[in-house]
Length: 290
Image 1 (cartoon, rainbow, N blue to C red):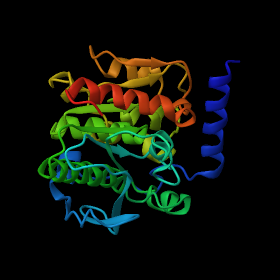
Image 2 (tube, rainbow, N blue to C red):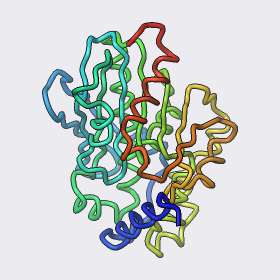
Image 3 (cartoon, rainbow, N blue to C red):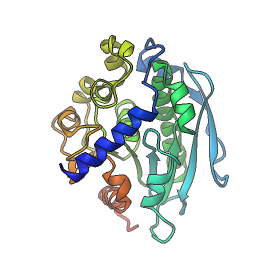
Image 4 (cartoon, rainbow, N blue to C red):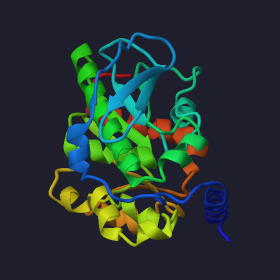
């Protein structure tokens, strides 16, 4: 068996063994647009060191997102806003690996933490309710917009929104609803977010009895088809067993994507490729050397 497929299948087996089935207690929730309209937050002082918590109010209780500067340059430098993958601990592991301290570039990099992802215990407890999952996505879409505007006001000449897996779906969502960044790079994601809960990381059986609810809140392919996506530069993995190429590739419609020769965790294991991709997209949108 292909080593990438084998690695992904082992990863999925561990999720099933040690996780709690998603949405096992309730699946009813408002539409994504209603969640987005209900989400409110105030961006804190961005000059703080270390982790910066961001309390969020919305249609779920006790939401706290957050952010951390991975790299800080002058205000006019390009900015990358990077969203964590689902269950990624620590939340800045992937993007921190992509931009270690010994790699120099004139760029700002901010890691964004989603609510309910502080540890696996919190994740398991909160995601028995589908409402919390949808509220989580809406909260970081709004946080992204606040950060885009803050960095724009500070003078950043190019702003790129990116993320891995769950973070890739969030990046696409921000593009769809705001498109205020210059470019977007979703890694191993797509527009058919809901499909993982019916195929690879199956939701609880009781939740799968309501496919229309889950799909209408998480999938956004129809709206995507009616959007100018020319500033989106997706990356997919050929052997991905979680967000499968056969599902997520077509979900982008006619938008071209880069294909990596690996599985779902390929980018996390090869963060230098993530860095190279992000910098190449910024270079396309920035006339000034980084």
